[in-house]
Length: 323
Image (cartoon, rainbow, N blue to C red; front, side):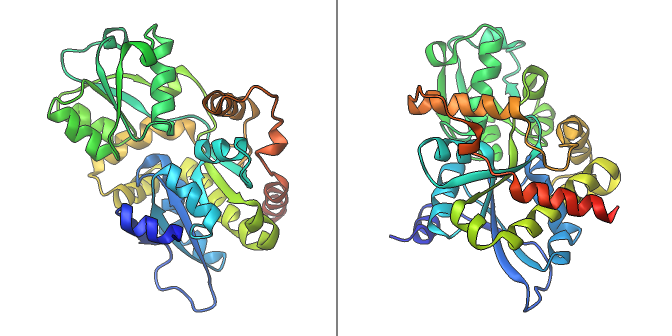
């Protein structure tokens, strides 16, 4: 069965037209994100500010769970994926996919718990809600909780619950004790009376959100790929330079009120990449080692097997020459 049919039949796929009235000559591109929140805001800003359109791209931003997005990438139904963890796991397992750039240098996830829980150390014997088992929210939660001396694999029950809204709803119904969410869901959780126990970027740095593509796409459509990279790099620059404009874009992107968007931006601005998409080696190795552990792979895997920075370097050179 075609991956497209799986997506339509098994998921509620939300599509956002990224470039207003698409020009007939524009190249149609589909980019997968896991959520419409501040974590994936570079795509939202590139759409809202017209950066994709400037590059001659008619982009659809599609919300798909990370495991399915990689399958769709391999099937040609998605052109690019922004969750780096799922792409690295696929590359480690031998699939022809490469990480091309990084736009968020750390994860923005926060652990939000029931009112009676005041610290991460109190989570022994509790139930945790994540997006999906094995995704970046699950990985971040495990690293954070373990950092505070609790063994999540042995001392907690972990449930995959879907998007942030579903995790908060389950927390509100008291079916779980703690959830890991991204801004602005952490702010919404605080408004419901829950406690924010810890934030991922306070605990560890991680190559989290960027751009990945199949080897086939990189080989056959290098100029298109470079244009996508340019638009996202411009978006990241804008996010660092224009706080008010970015907050407005986040309100529209995540469909949240001004206060939630403001708190989400201020709580996440420090993790926006400041080096034009450069992939931090240390953060990527953390992702790689976790992927190897999950796949029970012990051999050394060089970064060259999971990244391709050739196009990014060309784009960086071209953008510098325009300054």
